Length: 462
Ligand code: ASP
Ligand code: MG
Image 1 (cartoon, protein in one colour):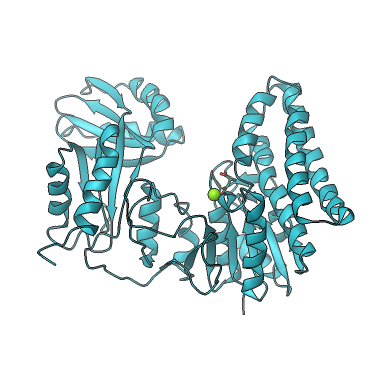
Image 2 (cartoon, rainbow, N blue to C red):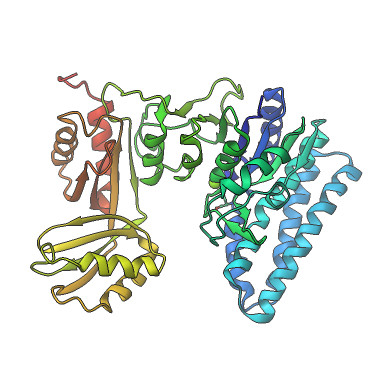
């Protein structure tokens, strides 16, 4: 029987009590699993800053590694009374930190870092976490080994910063490498290009690492441990009593993640949908029973009574607007614009057009580059290019949204009743999402209004 893959994220690695919880959870599995681990909470952000500052400050290298070493030393001292044992783990961590220091020092000397070097440096948070956690588990009497992506053959397409796993090259090697009857701890967030360079899966990418490994080994499930109660009908910070969603399809989970639900990285379902490997979500602060997931994401399609399962929002998008009477009727504009954006590596999330404007939804961080690029293109009918940043995308997700009459009407009536102005909307692009744009200041009220309509009132239509 293949092992389950168990993912612990930065949110499970915040305070000293978290480690004790992880040990308990691992014990509760009662059999070997493959653990995929993120960096400790905040460490990747810390490394991003260090990488930046190292370019012009030669002291950053030493300061960074001293800080990280002290962090681990303190946490180890709390969990391992035997100094000799804890020193063994510290020695392994020190080897990694020495490497990191040399790289940061090199960046200070040259004042520059290539994308390959950036990816390599940022992955140290995960490497250190893995060595740390394996040491702690060993010390708790659990037979555990660290398995670095480089030693198990987790090969990617080589795209720095946004890599994808090459399953043709990786599957049999990874399966073979993780086949012994013991627990493996794999650092998440990266794989190796075919020529052996560290390539990251993007921020928050350890979920994707875990999913890719689950696919390679044919795991019975991917278990993701979080610090919240699984998928909910809305963010508990936004609405008072969100409902727990016990079952979701891969597509529902992917759309929710895409439109801002923080619980899963949007790419997690990609490797798992075809082989039908379920994702089970647990809360490390709740019951540590490994047979009682809070939410299960699988191929099983369950249409909920109210159709809408969850409502979410994202502040990550902005609009690039091309205005001009006739842009909707003139062929070729989008082709030129999208090619320029594509060449600059800018992803387009959605396009909504009318006769007088083309609205391109893209990540806020890419807006100014996109604006500069598109402004430089010769487009005869476009009178003005504009960027709009103070918007949010709100999305209602649930199987059946597109097939059932009245759902969109209920959404927009609820918004109108609350005086919320919808700037743009799109239904039908995906059969299970209805999303729209509102002014950034209206997003919380919009989520509350829809949540109230679908989860807090009795619908006369049933
Ligand atoms: N540590 C990485 C990040 O913060 C990857 C992850 O947490 O999944 O983006
Ligand atoms: Mg994460």
